[in-house]
Length: 139
Ligand SMILES: [Zn+2]
Image 1 (cartoon, protein in one colour):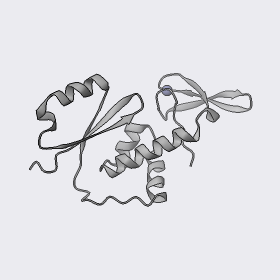
Image 2 (cartoon, helix red, strand yellow):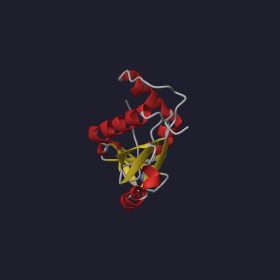
Image 3 (tube, helix red, strand yellow):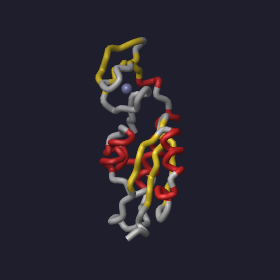
Image 4 (cartoon, helix red, strand yellow):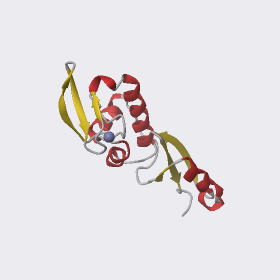
């Protein structure tokens, strides 16, 4: 596994930017943050593996997971294979999702219409929260 994302904004868009103390340095194309590979510990990797598999189980596509987490869909496909993850339900079904901060989340839950007739799950995503909503029983 060779997962690298910007530790500042989680973007996977970065370029090589010199070598410092024998370590390759990268510069994020999204936020210009400089980082070296060794700074990205295994803990961060595990965090994103978990998140990616969670989203996969919620019914999101590989491309959506790539867009949300900034992780290559190839990595996600590899993890799904590695951990032998199978989605138990019909692939026709697809949840909707939003990325919200804490106060937007509070506002969302204040409106009964937003949670009525649906299921909602909230998962932490970096400094924000992802809200996944099911409406499969609403025909
Ligand atoms: Zn960045």
